[in-house]
Image (cartoon, rainbow, N blue to C red):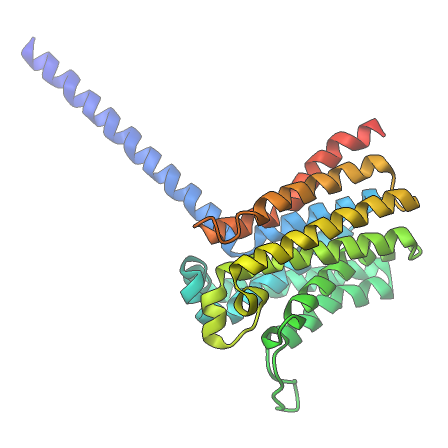
Length: 313
């Protein structure tokens, strides 16, 4: 009887050990998948695709390959940006910097293939779509590097120029998100389209500066001047909250002027309310990297609310 109890005990311990090992492997695999999703900028590509769907609904456009093109471009540009800044990011984001260094060669290939596919697909939308697809890559070269190809001439990076660094990022993505879907359907640039462009310009500007809060020490060390570096974190929170309120006013004006239906303003305002909540935590929440990721998820809030609103319109 005693021997049987020992055998049952051993079997129980073996089962527990086996389950523990399986759980550990599962958690490890989940962690690696999450790191790949976040550090490689794949999640940003997914968010960008959701943004294109939002634009298409706001402007009553049919769905086209524009969403896929934008997703590929975002993946390529942000992956290359992380590769270029791996050394400087080691201070502010060591996990991402380590991931990028470890998979540098693979990420270079994936980014190149992604942009190549984006360019190939953009041809389906015509020359304007092709030009818009090439714009973020061209601006990234000016933004992140200090040399002009074939000349050897070195110029100041746009990333180092106060305000212009954020304006370039916001402009590149606002143009791409708004006008690429239009180019695919040969749509006209209307006041509604200009409203959507301005809306995304302000949203991307805000999200970019929230991300800059986590990088303030690293940016200061390498001489990059951002709003958090120049004005401090507390004033950054006030400035970005002001931009959020101005964006809400813009949405209200767009409804009043008839640029968008009042029902479609609800998702946009929901996103702004979410952004105000995130912005209010700037400088007050210890995990600044998580806060930056939360800010980028604003468009997912808009997307989800939009999915509920559209069937009712």
